[in-house]
Image (cartoon, rainbow, N blue to C red; front, side, top):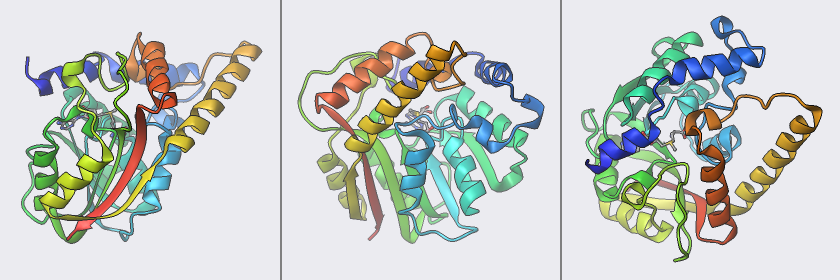
Length: 279
Ligand SMILES: C[S@@+](CC[C@H](N)C(=O)[O-])C[C@H]1O[C@@H](n2cnc3c(N)ncnc32)[C@H](O)[C@@H]1O
């Protein structure tokens, strides 16, 4: 099986939409009358969830109406946030057909119309003409892509002059031993985690000027501390846990999260932002 097939298989759930709607219903939400906030716990498949999306958004200076590409959009959480909060028109692409399908279905339930649209594609071969977008972002996707040079070359091609490219990926901080599974990979073959220095080198070679780099390790440690605290409180009350990312990560979710936190604590990985612009 090639890398992209294995990656897509890693993320495929099989009945994701009904699992999400079922969990929302159990939490007292009405699946036929969803509001954006109802999806907050499951919508954004990256460390720090919506808070980290907002923190990245604060560094992207694009106006209302800007055309923006979401690379590896998952089930569309970030695109819905940006469409609703910033008024951007978003095209999302993703390798996993089920995610593309669920992204469209959830956005239609929120009545987002043509503010967002999703299609199945690889980040290494973007199905758009040259100079289509004012900006692009990629949240927790590069860890699955060995050929980052191809991605950055493609993103450069579809951006307009001066276009901004914001990345928030988990990156390698040290050579420490890896542990599997993690949320993005169950085996070494689909884990293409790399250092921020290599990202910068490849971005520069593709024609970007890197403007900012920020490790979000401390933010991530605090995020997980607060999450554990909230989960313990809910458990102590005997209430069910609110819908969260374990729905997407499946039965091995606790092990995936524990391994990722161990790697974070040992300084092997760190979620990192890189903001760059077409040079
Ligand atoms: C951890 S999820 C993050 C999803 C989304 N960006 C978010 O933050 O909620 C990684 C996503 O990257 C997608 N992906 C991985 N490799 C890809 C590639 N080569 N092209 C497009 N999407 C890819 C996966 O299908 C998956 O949806």
